[in-house]
Length: 216
Image (cartoon, rainbow, N blue to C red; front, side, top):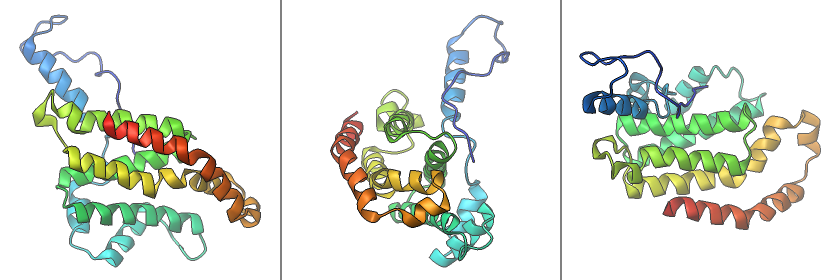
């Protein structure tokens, strides 16, 4: 999975034409630009892969992403089938938004990192939404008021992304946790009623956090 960096600029780098330890306006601007460039990187899909996928229909996109993710047999591996659907659905949604290649890149990397945070880092729903909000603050319209040339998504696109993640991942977060953390036997005996009850308990607080994020 890809990793995201929101940290400090790597040490030991001295911009050409400046004195070590002395910050000039140009060097500060360069460092700030490098910091911004690290948001949601490395990319989950390359520019060439995105361009290639855009020429395919949904079946072609599914097959190429299956190969990319190295999923062998979707008929016997339900978890892999669900993960593949997560990425395919996200790509098809972005296709309907008519994103640029750069926007596709950041959006698909965002999807990948959210799943990575859940699956590998065991990030809670609350922490995942908080992380999501921090990233959107960097790539969304609020940040662009400071550096317009860094704008990746406008207000309408950012709100659409928030709404999409709400219905595609966050509303089903407990189900994804259940899938990743539970044994096969627990999945078999788990009841839909029990899952729905857990989801309902979190629904009100979840909706409040989402609305707060959209207004941030």
